[in-house]
Amino acid sequence: MKAAVLTHDGFTITQIDRPTPGPDQVLVKVSACALNRADLGVIAGGMHGSQGGAGTVPGMEFAGEIVGLGANVSGFKVGERVMCSGQGAYAEYAVTDWGRVMHIPVGTMSDEQAVTLPVAVQTMHDAIVTNGQLRAGDTVLIQGASSGVGLLGMQIAKLMGANMVIGTSTTQARRDQLHLYGADVALDSSNRNWPQQAIEANGGKGVDVIIDQLSGPFGNQNLEAAAVLARIVNVGRLAGRTAEFDFDLHALKRIKYIGVTFRTRSAEEVREITRRAMVDLGPFLQAGKLSLPIDQVFAFDRLADAFARMKRNEHFGKIVVTMG
Image 1 (spheres, one colour):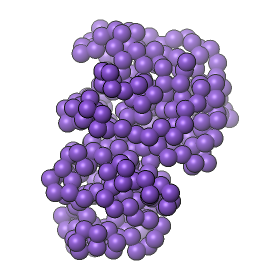
Image 2 (image 1 turned 90 degrees about the vertical axis):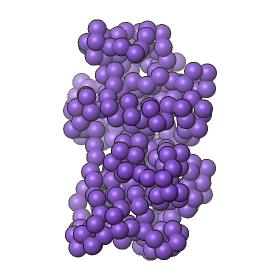
Image 3 (image 1 turned 180 degrees about the vertical axis):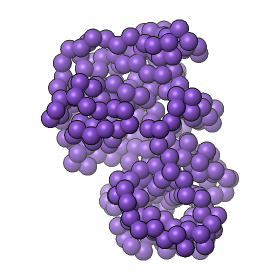
Image 4 (image 1 turned 135 degrees about the vertical axis):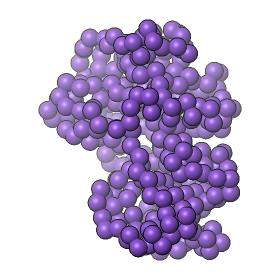
């Protein structure tokens, strides 16, 4: 099969053997895959969890048709269309644990649309609902809201009962579009006064749930914007992995500060995350109430061009690559 394979200085598209599903895995004929920012680091020679290194097929999201099932897999059938997270997405065939597989809503969604969703659905439902303990009427703020995960997070927050959703982006053109994806207020996180603006937008009360995809210098700013008894969930560190932290303000507001990642979660934990997400969000997906904009679609042979666009940070929404 054709696949993108990591080399010591990037990747090459070549022919490799088709994978065989293990007892708990699903084999998918890939029709579309989606780019994620973590893939940039892997292609540059880094690791993302256990993924990386020369000889590896990168990629975290793919959609297509089931063509094989492991002996322990139930709830799925050969021939069904599915969207998946996992590893080895940039190939004609990919395998993943059955707990990372979700059915594509019948008749309402193309494979190109579906492939934009798996990582965002799993990440943001877990962050907002499970770890963020979202309650009806809460105010939710998404840092880095113009990313694909951020855009879906705002929609999830709104559908699951948030009273006000605030999104941040440093680009005016992107802030202008956030209201299309659930934002009631769009703030410029490069403006040092944004925490006070968030408080004022919420009638003088701090934010109840903050989903932080940035961290670094934004750690203390999030504490400033947070309400007493707020929950801050750190899902990304695009602005920095380390920074000073105001422990006194954290204690004063009695904030729950939670760090999450899929890299150290067991297969059983990920299966439960997917199950919870589909219980809550499955009806909304079927009704077409959750979606992400597709920035641009590239043919698989132009995968390098797709990554060049992501590296330039020119995109809004998801970059998709098709195998056809």
